[in-house]
Image 1 (spheres, rainbow, N blue to C red):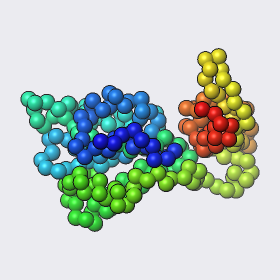
Image 2: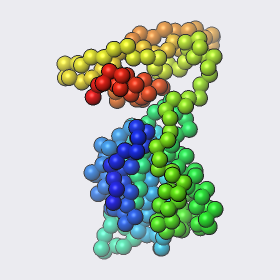
Image 3: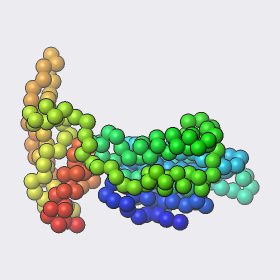
Image 4: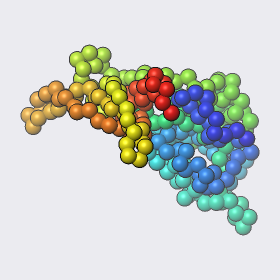
Length: 241
């Protein structure tokens, strides 16, 4: 079993196990790890006859990843010797920190490419995301296509160069980090400058609006556009931990 290792700053393998592990047990141990992550996962419900695996993703931040996996537990329960159809086995969980700046995200790429390749190799579809195929074949495809390699570059942003050139963007777009400090609880906070944004009046007339500087934690920053990249660059430059 492999779990909890980082491929790079953009992709982390939380679980990789051909034998599988009880979903609810794993979730109880790793709920905090999934916070604010996009994830790609593979699981198998005990009610399935034979090798039928569910492939899926959760793309939002916050507690969405945990909630998505926990939905399977709510529907299928926990493994029981009295009822062999109950329970779910989890085989793979891969994720990266949610960054709203990245539209073409890694977990969706993994799902799209894996599904396409499984179809090519003759895996029987049971709906778009359920396949009759061995877990060995799934893991082999993941390795051959190098889908678990963390090659996504943050900052591959879909936004207008013209607008940014005018120093205007969406309200949550980080322009720069100009300093840092620790609060009374010794929590690291960054002094953040945001891009100007367009504010519309009741007549739908746009007016460029400046924003005041804010002191934000890393957890708050990574939920802003460009926040994670700017924070990571600043931390590296100033050798912060």
